[in-house]
Image 1 (cartoon, rainbow, N blue to C red):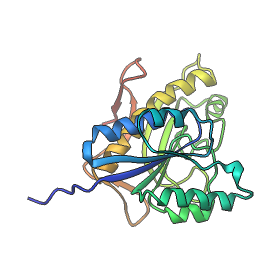
Image 2 (cartoon, helix red, strand yellow):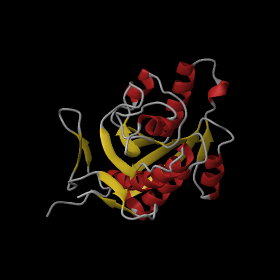
Image 3 (cartoon, rainbow, N blue to C red):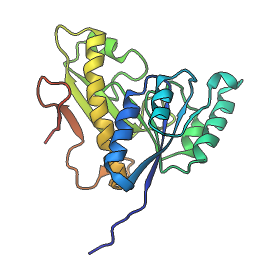
Length: 229
């Protein structure tokens, strides 16, 4: 029998806003017991609600405000130094509203993960729910992916899918997508903690023992999701 790898998967989470995905990540890490730990939460926004939540949970929370730096490169350097202090295995972007430069992305190559509110490669950038409704797609969702220097691009780890309804507005669609975001990011944290996630020679994600990495609502209850077989 092979030895079990008991090393901790160390995570740093980057936030800018309310932090609902942060909460899903922290809760998922705690469910893994000693296998995963959120070492720090770093925000580009000193007023982010996510910071207050993190501190109430006893997490180390730090601000690296982009407004304090005259250039993006200087901000990226300060942010990288703050992250490196915690020696993370992965850096998870959870509603982090800053575009990161190529040097920063390369520094954390293979360790930087983002969630985007669309089924990439469709609808990169902002206003994804409006774009989905405007184009008439029947399925929308979210994508957890490794970050590359190309905005909202990179090897896909998992996707969550919701149907687009005739009655949807951008707000109602966003709310349903957010529910699946929490489920998908939590599942990805579990896979990372279990050291199942790798990139193959072609730059595609493989998750050991997992045949499908797609999730969709199991019923009309947006809080219930199941893996697509």
